[in-house]
Length: 433
Image 1: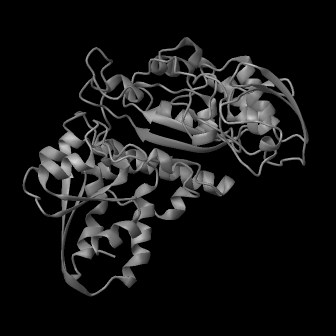
Image 2: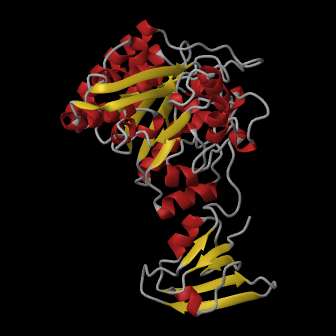
Image 3: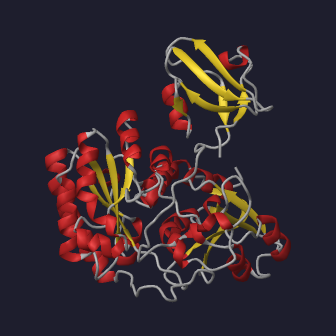
């Protein structure tokens, strides 16, 4: 893969010096351009020597004088131009290893690339970093990074990642600390392996890295029905989830008093498992691990509470159905109850059991078209069925199993409406606003 230029702005400097779409950017000031970070870092200088390969194979060397930080007007296809760094671990709980066969090839890609961590918040393990990667992180101050820790006990981490290099996590965090890099950390909780005393020790040791470590997110292990020949694991029980909530609550009180931050946060699923109410917004601070399923429910419920005073007392006859995963139904039930107090509105909820993945998978984001088809059947013909776009491939109306929204409408006769996951969009769609 090369740094092929996709577009050149007519108003940019690059167009003035003859750079064209299809040209390949090789280097800036002698520095190879392997990703978008290299380009943005080295292109800031006010004096540039750019080496390019033209479509006919000619190598051009172009000198450019510009204002510091002035945009050259180049866009590229993608953000990594050499090759994505893949995961070299064999984690006990790896979700990719638990996927059924014959799905989209991209779903089986195991990303462990520090560049995607910085750009998109993907969690990485640090086990595949070479010295040149470390130097780039330090030189460019790539902060924050998102790191899957799981345990700071070297033996336990090696056991969980099944990689002898996993025992260096303490040293690696120290190096990031010395470089001034902020780190958001993740612990995938596997009962019987990294819970109990080991978990508490990990939390306490990670907290000692503050303000390098600015968050500790704890999420439950996800298990599908495709774990043949994989290590035996189990999910947390309701009692274990309730005890964990109590323990983390105590840590939050301690760290909030010391640092002003709760520092350690639990995924929404633990509260659903324990049957307990979600904590208030203050618990989540700046919602720094929202993409990890930590605080999503609280944001939605608080947004709905803000909307509630503006809800109408009555509407012309409206019927609608919210289709969601089993976990999502529990979150949305109080919203549905309040909406059904609107005279003229008949709102139902339909939870889809995830047969495709099986196991304990109950989140809405992993629903497939086939399970939705099986659940809807012919009972919703002509009816409005609302689903979150989180179930669809980004930018497309296609589910994980490549069944499309149109396919479902054609087979079931239902009118499928997608919403963006916010309470505002959900309410507006239900009320035809």
